[in-house]
Amino acid sequence: MAKFKFVGFLLIPLALISCTTVQRGAATGAVAGGALGAIIGHQSGHAAEGAGIGAATGAVAGAVIAEQMETKFCPKCGRRFTSSVKYCPYDGTELKPLKEKDN
Image (cartoon, rainbow, N blue to C red; front, side, top):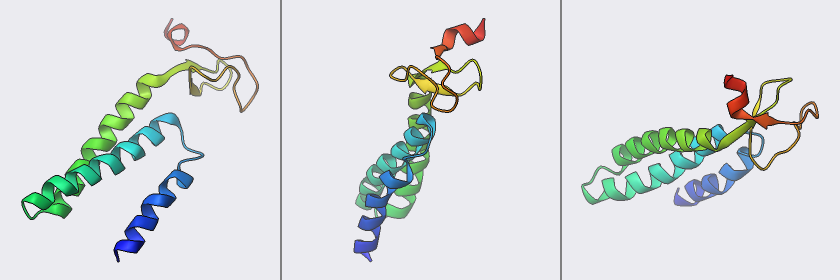
């Protein structure tokens, strides 16, 4: 059974390829938090509960951090991107700083 769990963790990066930055941050936080929570929970005999709490907390924290990384937006379609992207991959429009959207 442990083999299947390990294979599942290996497949997570493949599932994240087409996700947004926030979704990837939440998923990464959930995996890391769940693993850490399981380890801590194991010490008191509650590994499953620890994993659940850790995964939920990690997902929220990962999403919040990832959302802060999105610093550009497409003025045409409104999607957000990280600072490393210069043109919208969906419509080719040059991206603008996120602060301009709020004005």
